[in-house]
Image 1: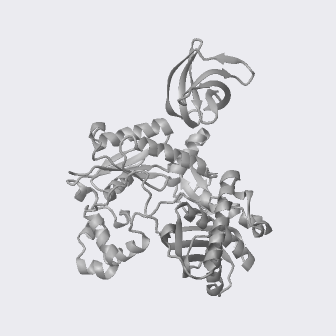
Image 2 (image 1 turned 90 degrees about the vertical axis):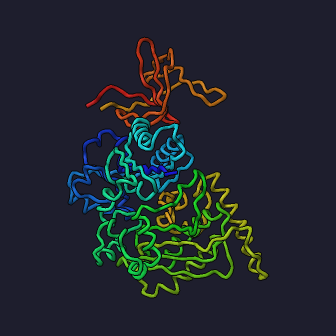
Image 3 (image 1 turned 135 degrees about the vertical axis):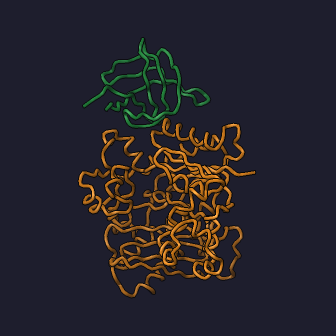
Length: 411
Length: 81
């Protein structure tokens, strides 16, 4: 049976929510902006009026102001975005149990078995109407027979529109589009493909085997499968946790980090957050990875295997800090730091070591679990390491609570 | 553009979690008894700016909207500016 897949994309999500809450912004160019004081001064989202003036997501605020002098910057309200996202998913779930979110503002729905609710187009139109009525924002919906084309469809006509891509019309509708429109064709892949005169999705669909293998490897075949409309990946059932391969947090510090002590505080906050999230899944990590970006915006990552799998912040921090000490020989001030764990296993399956340091690790685990429970009852900042108090400007952020909004990988 | 006016509300919460507003207390202390709740559904208020459960209520001869924004209640005030 032919599948019916919908991809719903909230138009200018952050900006739309802000404009809804502040009706005086209607009809003016608006951008949701990160906090310049915290050096997060970039455009996070913009409305159509700002977009029409050339403002792009990721622009520094001064650039946005140059392009559009009358632009209005508003700060983000993540709690509101989470609330809107949750309600949108509730609405989607009235039509099917196969709802797979992609970030806060996008989701796939498999409505193959939802015939009594109507055809794919009817459901898409109804969703648009309901989201507009109940949330006051608009969505674009793509309807197709696979996830990749459904996503492409939701991008084709905006705002508040339904686009249908069928087996009969995809050659006319999809193939003339630039190859960069395809899911997972980023700037680097686009450049590579363009170098060999592959500019449209249709040309990618016709690319020869050995060339693809030579130039792009395995990923090349996957992209060509997408271009040919042969993606068969399923829309996951709601509530099924995605397969997690790594857990990481990163931050751009409010000022460049110069001393080891400053790096230490920032890394500890990140390690605690990563450990807390890992405990939520009963994970242990075999590998720790750090990413560093210095004040010249040069960035790199380094990783290290741990002697035994661990899940606590202390071990993660120690490994991360050691990686920093060994690798950051340039000594340049750091602008941002990331800590990530991978090579994950479930706690119960960890093989016990004969070495005495395990006993210590277990003690630390119990300690940190106790800290988790205090924090869940009295708030994140109710209990802290003393070192955090030496520089509260650096330590006063809670990545585990604040940064859970990025789309997880499709692959 | 309408003003978003937060108001004090007396409401019944039944054992199933259903909420029925009974009266609205205006800023100046004036109490408006709600004679009937005509309908309730999730709606956005584009006029006042917000989302929530919208109760269509009858107060005397007037029919008006009362929004439960969880945990606060608001009404769409008269046009300003």
